[in-house]
Length: 149
Image (cartoon, rainbow, N blue to C red):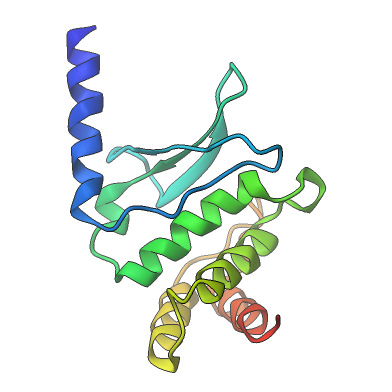
């Protein structure tokens, strides 16, 4: 048990090196914590624990090297999976929610930032099983979402 507590404390020590993620609440108003996991084989994932607590697991090794506004995009994307109405929860809608959220609070605003984010997204593979669009289509969708209110 001591080892588990120490491991969790060490994992939390990784995130403060970066700006903290924006607060996240589920569709039903439950606060959603971010939990770092450097062993995660992904940038992040939204889960619900057996007790019903929504959580977001983030790989600090993946998000760490990214520019702050790209990191915040991923935090907002994973948050969207909890914040969107369950009938609206999809990868495309989570992307749109995320880019609008970081745009609306001023995290991303200038064309250079948008270009970097969209170029990065365009290199990602799609996955029909998870609903992720192929990178170029995903970037195009994000640009369209960014440009709409």
